[in-house]
Length: 188
Image (cartoon, rainbow, N blue to C red; front, side, top):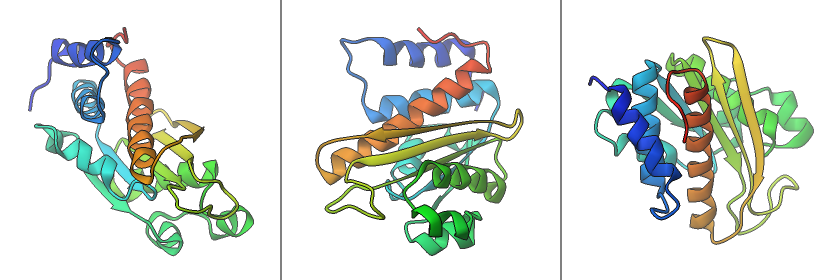
């Protein structure tokens, strides 16, 4: 699918319009269009979101030209076995920490052979995990081409589903920031 600059720019502008109150689907659409325009592929590693990020991305026409795949590593041992997250890192601080999200993103890029890896871990509830409170979320984006990485720790409120949607949307927003900063697109 050929994506032109105007399509990608319009998708970004829709996110910036405060009257539209963009949904997670608008974030996914912008992520696919901007990533396609930038010529990058995506690999996703999810825990707290349970596949929601991948589902959002695949709901957008043209996703197959950008998205390589997704790994749902909900169980802690799968983060280690499938994505290469350091067992000693998890032993020291549990599965809900920023460095785990970063290693998940690196693992997604490596395992799925993508230009950009995304990682998300956290606690949606109903109770804390590894000493992390409900609503704690860590998201990461790794660009294998430039070797740049970004990781953020966030705190969300609401129901279990609210927290999962907020985590997915935040990760897509972080991806957009990374893609736009390395392209000819201008974020409004």
